[in-house]
Amino acid sequence: MKLPSHNTVIAYLALFVALGGSAYAATQLPKNSVGTKQLKANAVTTAKIKNGAVNGAKIGANAVTGANVDESTLGRVPSAAAAETATTAGHANTASNATNAASANDAKALGGVPSGGFLRTNAVQFHTGALNACFKQTLAEVPGWFEITTVGDCQPEFKFTIKNNSSETWEFLYETGSTTLPSESSSVLTFASVDFVDLFAISAANRTRHALIDCAFQQATAPLQISCSTRIPPAA
Image (cartoon, rainbow, N blue to C red):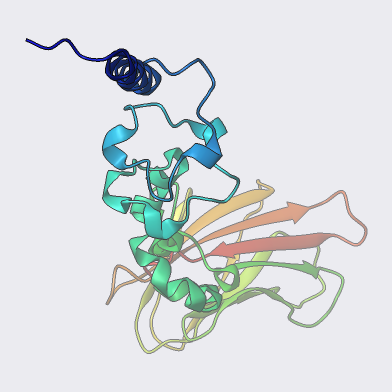
């Protein structure tokens, strides 16, 4: 067998070194030798990125938009818990109508007592009459029911006139007695030994129609006076 020539041996040796060198260069790249210039466009794919490798510091400001977010994966904002009770907020634009308290359920009761359980302002009266006046002065009046006036005789006595102005009979009860007044009748009540009297007036035809009357003989005033207050329960 003929041995290869010297030139042939040198050529094979050069080829071996060349092939070995390229393989070494492909598998043993020096550290930090690959830069942006060595990467082709779109060379780095999703599969090549390590899970969790991209953090907030690696994302540009405002880079992630709403179109990139899956809303179904988002949790509830802590302060949004209160928003669950805002189902009626759609009517909030009509809140100006809340001034009409007749439609406000919470305004119908105070301390658990319905509004009907309170006296109307016009159901409470207070009047004073001077006894040196020789004419009648109103001490209490419930229109359509009865009225109480001074006697008007210029006498400094604790007495007053009650007149029934209704078409029904009224009873007036007090500590020392009672008086019954038929329709359109009147009576003078005298209290000689006291300076204060409470009367309870009630309709004989309708027991829900009643009133409380408090009268005081003010002897310390000049001239002498009689003062009366009247209260009508809401049900009346």
